[in-house]
Length: 159
Image: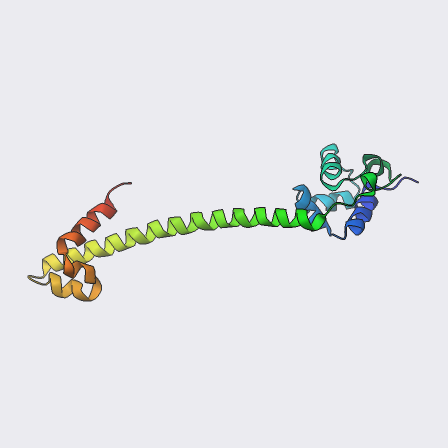
């Protein structure tokens, strides 16, 4: 008796004790893909090849529903594959986060440079007020006003 692609996928999910979302992650497919299969669309040749390769599924069973599900009766270790995919997702997220924080650090450096320049401009407007004005806002500038000016110039210079 021939079964539908959806019935075979459901049987496979039950055998592997995973859900559609986990299967789509393992195969690198959109989870909505299996909704199309549920609605009667056939599995593509590419998807069948992925299932056979990554899940050790017997291609004859996948095509017709006949024979053993897994080649040699060996059920793949899905937990290990899921953990690997999870690690890959984690690394991608860390890379995105690092990019965000690098951009944010550059923005903050620019803001500090702008504020430092504003303080220097104000201090020049107040006779003898540089040390007094910067002592509360920028303690490093009190130690060396010239160093503070160079810091502003360096931060405003193109990179």
